[in-house]
Length: 117
Image (cartoon, rainbow, N blue to C red; front, side):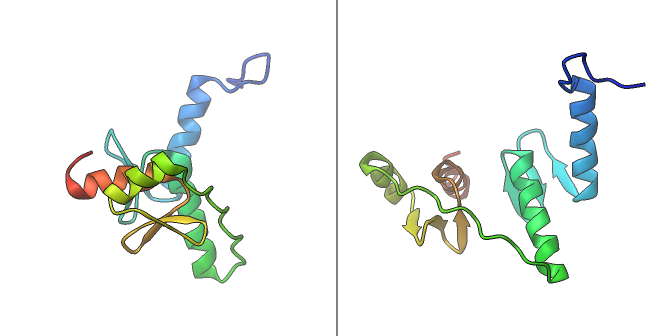
């Protein structure tokens, strides 16, 4: 029995089954707010899965494609990020030892680290 609609769009049941499968395959948990893979937290499941896939590839010695370069911040973004301790280096946003492909993620974790989330 298939749960797909006549248009080929996955149903809510299929999407939930895929979410559960990915979380089980990559040992990702969800606490109601964040997905967690290892010691890292993510707002989106896709980000957690991408990290898990890269980690598995790195451990297995497989070729890991380079991360896409993040766009440079505009003036307003630059002021906001510097007020939270986020920097932009080599095409990535950085917060401490961690790098992010999106400014929003770096700012979110800066807020969590300072208790301003």
